[in-house]
Length: 493
Image (cartoon, rainbow, N blue to C red; front, side):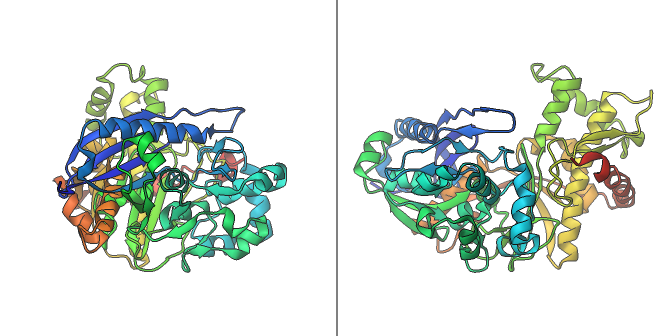
């Protein structure tokens, strides 16, 4: 039987998707399963690692029922980032995993950065000091529940956990390990200085693997549980954000990858680990160079919150089209309304976890359409400033590739084109994170010589939105006003 399929297993925050892909990036079948979240107290967000495994098993079994699994050449995993599990010697959880949404380490951010040094944390890991990297939650456990750290034979990311369950090898890819904030991104090795400070042994962490390399094969036990063939190669992929960038062929020179999802990601490939407060520096999903990420923590979450709170809710299937039509009739600038979009805190450029959202300039003449448009304008301009900073630091950027639900909005994609002066290409590649993992599997299986080639061959673009150069001055003036809507002395805790 010809091995003409690869599987991208995307274990995200609330669900797992297993998709079989062809050599040209066409999905042929899929399986899905949900993953529950728990909030044992305010600010804490956790998951049971067995739910990760159960969802993966269910999704893979469902997929295996749709295809002839003997056709599958390899499997790779895309995983939710900045989520950490604590496992015993048998690979079982000693406590629930702590999800990236968790905020228990809010005070720990300042404590640990004061001990190690903000500049050192940033320069070694590529991550500005912020609540998101796992290092701060590990420090919280060391300071508040040290028994958890002592009982944990393994401290793993989701990729490492699932790889261990599937192959018996506890392996983290560079891109799944990177969001922990413990990785020296120049050496592609765990930072011994950070491990020593937290009293973590290297053997408690996953073995590091370059994306696209084989990390093991599916065991007989895992095959029986998932429906996969015993001996199927498992290839390193990694963090879902980087995998999604790869999945739309956005991890290459000249391109900005724009993910208009729950969190809004503005990513660009760079040959060197450029350090800046305008982005966080991630390892590249190709294994070569780096991936600079501007990140708006709220993203589409802010839009959904606005609709649910002020516009009657998402139960009305026409609510977005109505709001978009109304907003499209309003000129750039929302007739004076500006928005600070930091509903759940700010990452770049302020790195202020206590920042909060605000609507400014309201008058009796403004309605829902003005507010909705101002929200979209604010998020557009946050990304546009990140792109400008990337250009000012020497990156050559020629186009934007957009993916995610927001890519279906003609109004929003037009905003991005006009505000940045760049053409916006709408990606036709569905399930970008799973596809990015599948590209890693395809390269690892020998289908393509490089991951760059796999990305070029397996991705697809559709409509292009061409910028109107006459609108740049208008957008630049609005950017200055919108940027001023952030007031740290008012918004920070």
